[in-house]
Length: 173
Image (cartoon, rainbow, N blue to C red):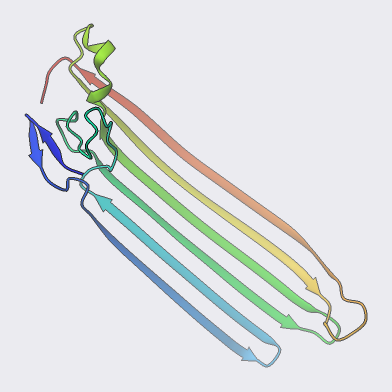
């Protein structure tokens, strides 16, 4: 997406950087006990958001005089532990996730009605942080008999912290 604005002329304004990583491990300290852990993380930073208003039909952000930085990140992890008793297997699954999104968006293109009141600059800032945890315990029968069964309990919790702010001014940058 390009910007062809009197305040900012630039090609590929939505260029970004991304990194990802993953770690996995399997440990079997006993023949009947296995532990499998997994974690992945990702972060993307962009110089500008990839949103256009298509007023003139082009892929350009001509109605935003300043950049709109964005950072999105997440982390996901699991731990799967299993112990095989003689007549059932005990399974414990634990999962964790966290996500964040921080945006500082030039929303000046929304100013048609506010501009009549003297507002010339508008920014929307939003910070979102979430995290969750889940735990599951299961008893699983062997799959060698005529009857197989599974039973267990499950717990999950999730929290979100969302903060939004709108900055308006009658001064241009």
